[in-house]
Amino acid sequence: MPSLRLGDIAPDFEQDSTEGRIHFHAWLGDSWGVLFSHPADFTPVCTTELGRTAKLKDEFARRHVKAIALSVDPLDKHQAWIADINDTQGTEVNFPILADADRKVSELYDLIHPNASATATVRSLFIIDPAKKVRLIITYPASTGRNFDEILRVIDSLQLTEYQGVATPADWRDGDDVVILPSIQDPAVLQQKFPQGFDAVRPWLRYTSLPKRVA
Image (cartoon, rainbow, N blue to C red):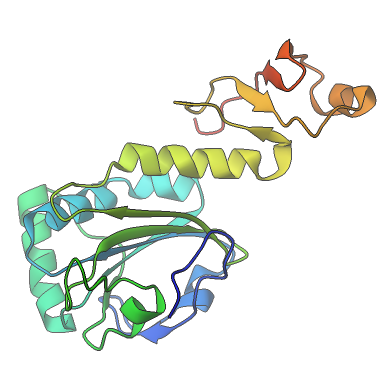
C-alpha cells in the first residue's frame, strides 16, 4: 500500500486493544486523535513514551484529543507490559494499546519499513483531525524518544490555525505572535478578523497576537 500523506483520510479499522475492541473512526468520534506505533512490548524507549502519554492525560483532554498506541505483540503481552509501565514510570496507563499481532493496522498505516525491519513496526506518530484527515506524520528512529512537548505544540498550532486565517512561525508556542496568511489582503477582512491590529514587516509577513488557547 502507498504511504499515507497529509490530508489523506486515516484508514478505519477494527482491532482488539487493552480497552476492548476498537472501531477506530467510531472510537475517535468528533475528537482529534494521536495514533503512535511501537516496534515491540517491553522496549525501554517505548516504555518511557507510554508513561509520558499517560501523564499527559489532562493536557490531551484540554485539547479534545484521544491517544491510542499500537504494538505488534498480542494482548496478553500488552497487559503484562502495562504493569511494568505503571511501575517503572510512576503512572497508570489510561488509553488503549492496540494488539496488532496480525499486522493489519500496521499495513494500513505503512508501519513496516523493510529497510529498517522486515517484522517490527517503525515508530511513527499520526495526528488525525475530527474529519479523520491525517494532519501530521512523524517517524522516529528506534533510538530516539518522541518529544511530547512538540506533539502538543503541533496540536495547538493545528487547532489554532484551522479557522483563524493565520499560521504559526518557527518555534511558536501557545500565546506567541502568529503570522497572517498572505492571501488575506482585503482591508475590511483584515479589520474584521484582526481588530487588535498587526505589524506588517512586509506585505506578506504580518505578525499579530491572539489569546492563549490552553490555560
